[in-house]
Length: 385
Image 1 (cartoon, rainbow, N blue to C red):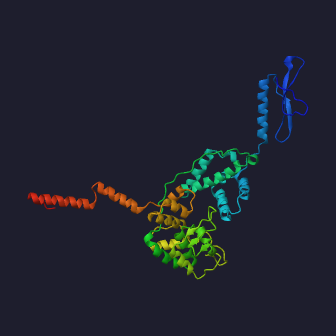
Image 2: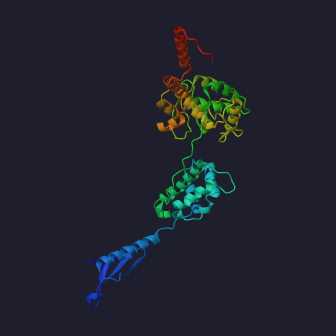
Image 3: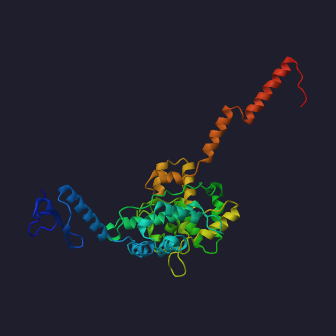
């Protein structure tokens, strides 16, 4: 028997008796999430049926009280306001460009309607734009990563946006990995000479920090003189990606060159523009492309100098754990992606295999000489070639 609602009790079932037992009915009285009290008849005298009826009423009330999911156009401003202060204006500009250029078709669509089929159509439209060259899967992965970041922001605030989980589960594309080149170690000295020929003398300093310490470009452009411990040959970057200040050993050749820099001061930026501020991102990109053309090697991005630094360490026999520490990686798997295959090791392995298979030139020459000696001893004349 269901309990009867007493005074002050506002959520549940109660049985209202009729003139006859067949006129008895269960009534409900519930309070909605917004504080409104609803009551009425369940139109049944069966307790189980009345409970099912009340459950449906509560689900309907919960659905009505749930906020309507926003659209991407209304969500992004709130997402930008919630970003940390260190997020640059450039990043925000790139994010808005993704919405403007590639997601206009769904910009005004509620988030809960971004199903797999919708995202797959977006992918096809991105990769094969009408009347334009095909785009790369890497670009689509960036769009998808940004879209997921927006969805994660909405899912983390279900009481505000009404989204419990991401409505799509489309996997990222797996493009063919491109051939990535590094700076050959034998061209290192020539590389430094060409770097010093740049019109801006700060280019040579920034590139030396990148190839000599394995710094990222932004770390080299924000390097400061007070972070160098001259007596200990140590440089501690104070502006890093992982927010960690880990000391780095400065090689002798780099330390002696830094001591001779004409604009060296006790403190302040090592490289700066006309206003005394740090240079903009990609400051070394064009000078590096010019240097690569003069060296006759494929074009390198500034970050490939960090990869070159890691590869040189590995080729010199430095353990991967030490390479990881010098690159300041949290995971050894990240370091493995930086270290290019050791050409000398692979060449030695192939030479050993070639010798085992009997295909090496020396092996063939010895075999011919042996046949010639046997033929000479047996008195047979060698046939002319």
